[in-house]
Length: 219
Ligand SMILES: O=C(O)COP(=O)(O)O
Ligand SMILES: [Mg+2]
Figure 1 (cartoon, rainbow, N blue to C red):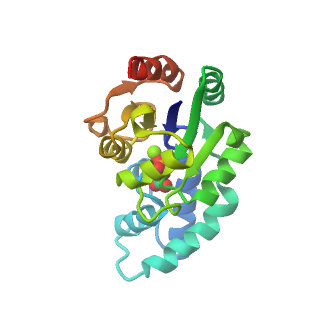
Figure 2: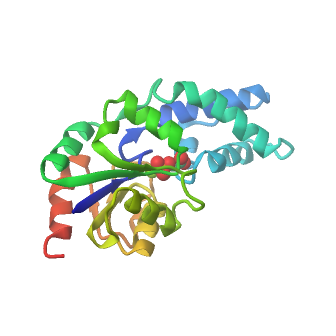
Figure 3: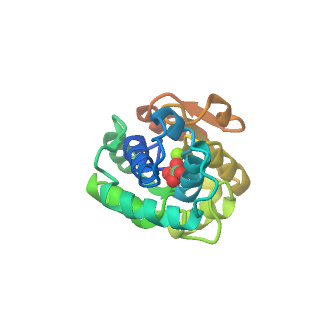
């Protein structure tokens, strides 16, 4: 069995508009200015908790209780996870092609699993995945390889026959730690340096089937 594990934010889903809107709504409640979309882009990748902490730090808000703010952010974001977010172009067709070529699919995201499932269901692709491992599904999350290994186990795969596709250094580090191959998603939110240590890089999601096939052939 060959398993392709996808990151969510910045890899399958362009979630920046909604994350950015909700960061702005949250800060507005504290009387603080909204961060720009560019600023929020660089805050994504370590889960919502870190995103909120970074947004507060960015605004110079030292005295606001982080846990209260994170809770409030999820109240704002939960009902609007797909308000303006969209699948990156070619995503659904590529996932369906991979399934047609015999790949098992999974998602490994630092986003809370309920929000991840909601997004995948709304875009009609949840059923394509054998497993969804969220940022709160296991005791650890990316870059800890235990998050990826837990997701691979849920999908009944093995690390040696798995490829992690993601746009953040966390995705590449988790894959390396787990003993899986990785493809850096250049179309996402990561800096070019986040690709360091990846097995391969791709410009578009439509390129994944051919690259992934090459990486696992002969293994
Ligand atoms: O929630 C985040 O910050 C990032 O989520 P991702 O792991 O799907 O990129
Ligand atoms: Mg990502």
